[in-house]
Figure: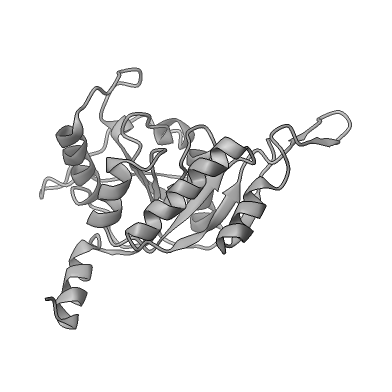
Length: 228
């Protein structure tokens, strides 16, 4: 049985060197705007809050951070063989997309994915960061569980659209993080409505208030909504 001191020591070991807080931007379903939320949050924290921010693209099979952050170069390596994150818009970024050809399919099995994630977390010289934003892949599979267990996450932010299917998967995501003792920071709703560019009238093509209702139902904070 671990003593309180050994638990604290173990928790400290899980943290990335120099990183104060790490939060996961997650969703149960793909295509809900998770990566867009991660990028906007990271840039806002860096520019408006004047924080030292990192952005880690954990979506190994579908990396989109290089495109969204307008980065098309490969990272350099330190004398200690650690990769140096590439900075743009005031945010230090790392993605598997920096290391492979843009259109190359990533056909990897579990052990290769685990090795890649280890290199993109502990194999990166992040320097001193106030917060590391992680763009997680959709779903509640091996990658999500591994990152939750291998890093001491400060919390997870759940992204969904108002659709019933997306909300059903978002609930699964919440329950997965609850099982690994990661606090849920709240729910963000994307594509809440389509605002006509001509008349300005909103159309709720995916339903209205779905994520807000789910947050209330699960006792979570509703953090806001975005237009389509």
